[in-house]
Length: 228
Ligand code: CTP
Ligand code: MG
Image (cartoon, rainbow, N blue to C red; front, side):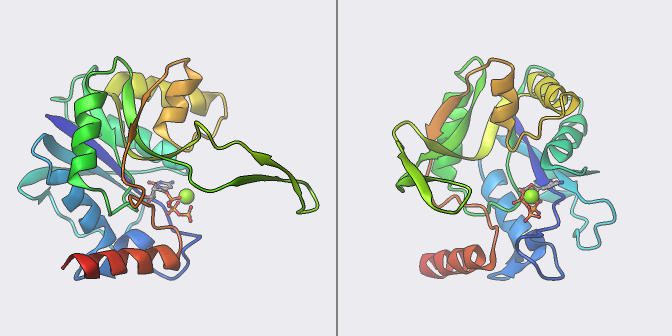
């Protein structure tokens, strides 16, 4: 059984509005609830730590979801600080060499089959694994003037998604190492890579997107309306 850390302590500055995006309601439930539902629906996910912003006024106060335990803690300035807080708040039953999932609260469209693949394949890798999706667009390198310097080859380029699956202590050490070096890691894998480790890429659906702007929210609303 695997625990999850769900960073939900961001302010949604790119999304805008009064309410942090994880608390916006779509089809009768908040984005955070959709995300927790997607994670905790997996039979091998045991519970989750939800990382909240200091002074969060919107948290529902749930102590369980889908019949599974939910714990909370307070996050930090950057996403990586929030993940570190979540790792520290995991129950003692999660051993230091156990794998844990980290999954963005703002990524509500995770499919069970992808989570299943990640758990299955990641647990058989010595380091761990991340969900990812190959880059499909043609990539341009811009110059200072906004003109195109060149086209970058997209072969072997992947977009990193979440969840990401790593061992509790190894991930904690890697995130602390990045923090102490003043490096802003934007996902867990980047912290592990800094240690010379090579996490496995597990291809997942490209519609496991992060809600960053109102257009992303409209896309998620559309997907839900097609599903029902
Ligand atoms: N997050 C967090 N703690 C932070 C920053 C982000 O827990 N200090 C969480 C967000 O709540 C989100 C996830 O990390 O679930 C991914 O971050 P992002 O999409 O960047 O969300 P925000 O930081 O809230 O948005 P923005 O960057 O536009 O302000
Ligand atoms: Mg952010």
